[in-house]
Length: 179
Length: 220
Image (cartoon, rainbow over all chains, first blue to last red; front, side, top):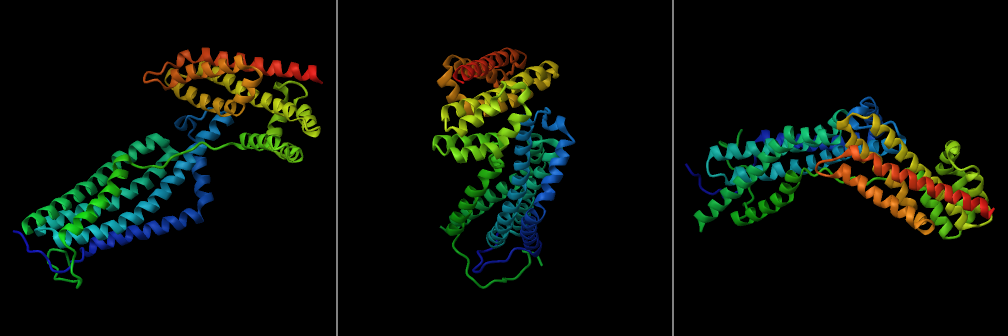
């Protein structure tokens, strides 16, 4: 069944809006926490890394180890910052794209699928940066990144990309049927 | 209420499908690239206290601001480290640098600072050689790579000064360094061969330290 084109915008479902707003709220809280607990976070990460010298390849020579620690701490901080930025951005993207899906999807089934993919993918992807940051002190920069990729970035980022292209396909079909 | 059953809840007219399509294309372009690349930022190695202090001293000497250089030397991390390592350095190095700064002798002060930084690089090469002999085979490439980065961070500070005074030693160090890097950064690393170029680095840098110390004694 194909529904006709809507003369007005349709709002996304309330759960999608809730997820998007929660994501933006988490982004703001994480930004504030990064400032408020900067020292505590760095101290915790440093202590956790020093307790696992073999994971981080520490060799017991200050001139070598300080660079390893500095890179890991910079990446740890970067992971938190990237979560903050991506969560803000993806929250907005969820609202925008689910509204497009709610308005233009040809059938209720399409609409549900698109909204679900856009919401889950958009909300999950930024969490990958948080996971990566949390894993760095325990698993190291590269191993943490590998885990975050397979656990979060690839599945959720992939869901978002698929949903975006499906949405593009839906709109192309709409254009063709209108033309 | 879900999107399936909801009535029309907004009043603004939506844009055409073409406009929305263009907007989506922009969003995909902006967000798909980070998703594929898993953008995680870039890391640029920073100076440590010693290398930062060395650069400050060098710039002060170049500007012939000897009072500034003397203060930076007296209060800086470089002198603290130099004194802590005095046992492994040419005798009188600290006094020599300070005296050169006092009398406004930039080349002599620079030579003293160069000797210290070269000694730091040499000690790292010695330690790398020692650790590589004791490390398990699968950890050697990573250990070697980290030591080489640390050695280069110091040597790079004085490469020009070493080249001016002992071009052969500088060439030996650079060639040995390139060879060592090749062993740890190759697709199939060969860290077991790393110790030979490291020893050449140690030998060449020891020569630079000894030659500079002798010339300092002759000049005094």
